[in-house]
Image (tube, rainbow, N blue to C red; front, side, top):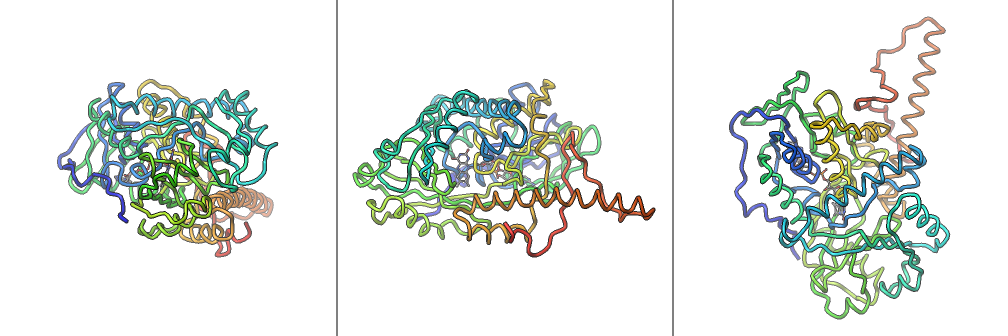
Amino acid sequence: MAARSDGADMRERPRLSFDLDVDICVVGAGLAGLTVALEAARLGASVAVLEGRHVGWNASGHHLGTVMPGFALPIGELIARIGFEDSRELWSLSKQGADYVRANATEGLMPGIALSEGALEVSNVEAGEQLISRLQMLSEDFETDVEGWQVDRVRDQLKTDHYFHGVYHPKAFQIDGRKYVHGLAALARRAGARIFEDTPVVSIDASGIRKRIVTPSARLRASHIVLAGNIHLGEPLRRLSQTLLPVWRYAAVTAPLGERLTEVVTFQGSVTDTDGIDHFRIVEGDRLMWASPETTWAARPERFAGTITRRIRTVFPRLGTTEIAEVFGGAVGQTVHGMPQIGQLRRGLWVTSGFGRQGLNTSAMAGQLIARSILWGDERWRLFSPFELVWAGGPTGRVAGHLVGMWGRGSSAAAGALARYRERAQARERIREARLLEANRQAGTRPPRRPTPPVRPRPMRPRPPVPTNPGEGEGV
Ligand SMILES: Cc1cc2nc3c(=O)[nH]c(=O)nc-3n(C[C@H](O)[C@H](O)[C@H](O)COP(=O)(O)OP(=O)(O)OC[C@H]3O[C@@H](n4cnc5c(N)ncnc54)[C@H](O)[C@@H]3O)c2cc1C
């Protein structure tokens, strides 16, 4: 069994070794950064992408390639947070993101992209009524093509008693993830963007009209900086990195399974379960590509082969033991509220990050929104303003996230619960501070000096950390 190579070693990587002046500097050559670069270059801007390692080094080159509308945050929670009308608009943007990927992911533009159609969301519990209301909402209110599948139909295509009802998305699709990120880079280069690899950004000064970007061997000046570094952004804006909870996910591809596989799985699209544990699909005719549950620590991908084999056997006992051919994975950035970070932090300083486990359509949508805002003044990114930058917990929060994950059914669900807990804690903290302020005002005493977080930041600004205590998260 091998860890997957991403083909990057076979290419020569151009580094930035001379000073440069551009309209837009993008930090990070993952899906998010490359989409902004491609769109901005197509609209006529001069663009430089600075990548600390190489194109698609992290999650963007190591994912399962399922493209669906929506966000990592479940739609019901989205509506509860921002209301029905704004949710509809965001959902529609997320559909446009999926359309954008489809338009790029053609054999003509990206040879070998291997696009296949359809995705099935399956329920781990008997939840027929919930399914019907979800179907109605998606098709009638959110104008999304969906079909409800009864238990029999699901089990006809997936021979397991693990799953019950299903929601079939005929317009969802899947692509070869590595081919897509390298294809995006090729399209961006062709449109005129310059991509420099092995070029980490070590600091930025975003205060002036012309912003300064420092790398180990050269400096850049740009009117706009787009931060697309996900959890690895680091020094250029550490407080921004701290608004993301890093979550690692690994996936394996089995050795060919021959007829054993066709006897138990005939569905050819992606399958995801409602608990966020299983995500799999058939690749190359008779292999399974299967993602492991999420973790909040990094490890060698090979370590997850056993976990994934066991998970496959639990869901499909008839497959018996499966041999794993390769394992790969990466870290995604999860926000406290579950929605991506898309917007302008200050004039000319942009962020596109925090896409979590659903990064293909969402980063495509974000890339278009940001490029069009910079070059055309399109202000639709402001729909994301209700989702502020909230501190995600630092090391304590991460460990707590993992512990909670071990108790819960799925660590992603638990991480979501932890995140929501933190958000509530943050709200409580704001109320506490307001009370303290009022008490100080009445007593005529000076309050302790602390930065006051804006209530509804436009533009977005990172919030100061919530004071933690070691037991944070344990009450979730
Ligand atoms: C196993 C797995 C399966 C997945 N499956 C799916 C799926 O089926 N469908 C889906 O929609 N999503 C999926 N995802 C999620 C998706 O892959 C991510 O949301 C997406 O790739 C995030 O892209 P990004 O560009 O924000 O981040 P990244 O891929 O992390 O890219 C950021 C880049 O920025 C660079 N960088 C960071 N800091 C600096 C700096 N200071 N200077 C220079 N460069 C810097 C990094 O080196 C990195 O290359 C999956 C993820 C994983 C791990």
